[in-house]
Length: 112
Length: 116
Image (cartoon, rainbow over all chains, first blue to last red; front, side):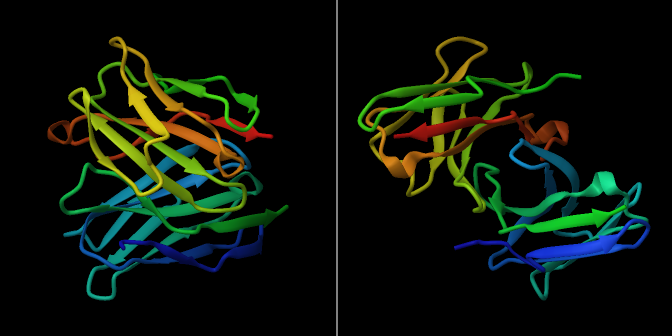
């Protein structure tokens, strides 16, 4: 099954540092997306990268995609305490109803 | 900014009872989804709905589950006879058509279902 798995499971950093989260998946994808979830709340879309793209930036976010390794990374630069949340990668298959298959997530704690 | 809304925010029900979770997707979206998240676990896909029919469902979405879009705005998930293991956060999401460039999904705040 197509499944995103992330590492690390948990990450604790100091405010101002960079945070890197990694995601691996198993099957061919149309695109890969990153979502953020504050504790017990809904998911918020952060950034999308298509299968023919290698890198994308949005503000303090940088996402990379390596389709040969079936992996992606999310970098948050100059982290803030407000970035504390869980971060999930989600893949969309080539032929699907555009459903999202989520990874297990990384819990990020940014210490002030 | 348009958003997906869900009601109720928290539902407590007894095992064997029927529950209906309600969602109002973003108005010009055409693709609708239900996901669930058991406490501490990953978000799992349940079902997708397009053009007034189910387009895909997961193994979790068995005969106890059904979805409906009864009018032009609501999208509901019904669980006919709840089990303890149905306790989870249920998220509704919607998406605009891909020909508009819309691949990201917009999620509601969720309904926490507790089955006792």
